[in-house]
Length: 285
Image (tube, rainbow, N blue to C red; front, side, top):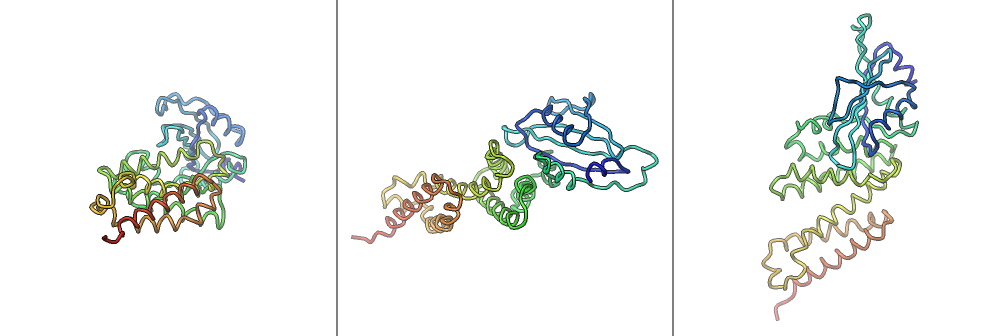
């Protein structure tokens, strides 16, 4: 069906992929999956890499790559531009993005349809909008949930929402919140470097638990060795109950990940927070 749509009369699409492979590897993958032949596009260069092009009846195909937020990856962009055929110029172009990405995934190729916000962020257009959790989810969900369906997609969207909210909350405590969110996103994307696409949902679940634990651990770093008297003077004591509630809320989720190190981390934080709270509440002699 997808190949038939590429044959005409007029189509457009954009799909993207994060890859550790070279652009040449991705070119060969697409040539096999779509039965097309790309040639070097001498007038197009992105981040020092030459782009590729091909022509089919419905559109002109362009394939290029530039730097992704995570240095482990390249951001591969595959687009179809409506064919410049005067006989079809008045026909509306059919958007094949979703159909093409599904077709490629069925062939075992890791592609998704990026949200417009991802393109804006890649172009450096987004600023404070990056502190909106919904904007963050709109950029993460297409890639991380492309291989999920039904209930998994719903759960994954909720997990991403929790991750985004935790990033924004932590970022607002820094001097440069937008840069902090960008840093966290790059680190998060790096988690998938060695994970097959179909396992991405499991990685998402692990991160959704590990990230808030690591954030709390970092904030407790300066409190661990304080005396009760010193601890009582720190403003962080008003957040100890909040942190303990978060750690307790992750009990089932951390067991669900099946990763022993995450569960041990959660248990260690629960014990530490219990000791700190008991110390602060110690009755006067």
